Length: 478
Image 1 (tube, one colour):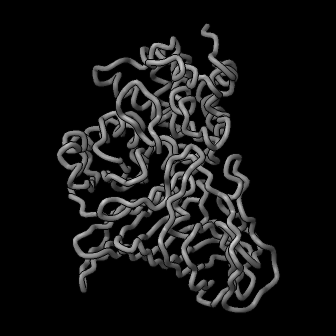
Image 2 (cartoon, one colour):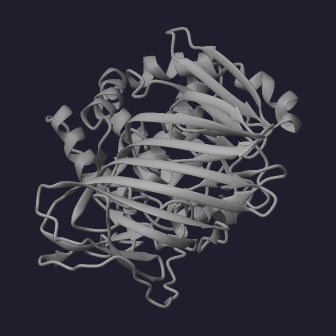
């Protein structure tokens, strides 16, 4: 993600936003046999910004990914077993997969017919699946994973590093390294097993459950029990320095740092347990069973990303960036946006977390930061100030603008206006209650505004929603 303009020097995850959903039509390929009666699941969930993302007709419950990677030729070999429940009768279903060569597809162990067209892998089981039926699709594939270019020119997908690679998925990059239902509203558990040349490490989400070396190659098995959107899945491969510790509450911490970044990262990462303890007090119980970080230097990415349980940083992070990405574990990872239009619920909350951290640790108060932004004193240029008011946070202009300043700072300003209205005590209850109400789920902007109104039924939030959340330009201050 490219750096978002900001007065401070740290830069969390910025531009992701992409739609590299150009459909390159490839020749149909088929294997297996049979057909069946029923309907075909939809190709795409009609997201406001990425209409081809995800697929209809089924809900994924688990991804089992077995991967092998060789950094020299950049070759990935994979077997993905996708366990799902049919939400309608299905004679065929679609998976998102960009690039790579599919060698074989089975459904419930039986060979299935399949064809490719752009990012769509259409699978036709040997018999139709019935609504409510749980089934498993297994895809065998290989090739050199792609790096995608987003509309804002940032890079995502499978990114080369000096000694390996890192997979970053927001919003569409995960489909470059495994097939699946790649939209945030379909979350699932994951088991990711990665085999790499001996001397390298493969780091992913969740907990490391096994590690063994045989014949010059090492296999790492990672387990994520809590639901995860596919854009938050990651694999990072390199000769990392590994550090294990725990927070004050006993939460396991696992960090992987490129040796060239180790010295510069040490002081900030040492504060990760402290940040997590503060965040637990501020946002409520941590929603996952481990935490950590990956620090590396991809060739093409200069942004941090809140990959679930193990945020990624493109070089040594500063403290504000660490706070931002860890806050996303509550807001974005556990409570995930229903559509990409709801992205301010990720970025506005994580940006406001930075303001709260500063306020609680001797820096500017959130009110001072809000005032500086409103007055135009926060930025060095008038151009940056104008960018803040370019569009309302809940209505980004297009997919290319989903990580622009209004989504971050103006989103945080919406939260501060709520705080001014309800007072500190109720506002902090809202922060915790929102995270609890949608824990491990998805939510929309409408869900959030309705939640706030229920918590403070005697308050009128109409002007906040109209002027700050949906209104054009700089609102008038009362």
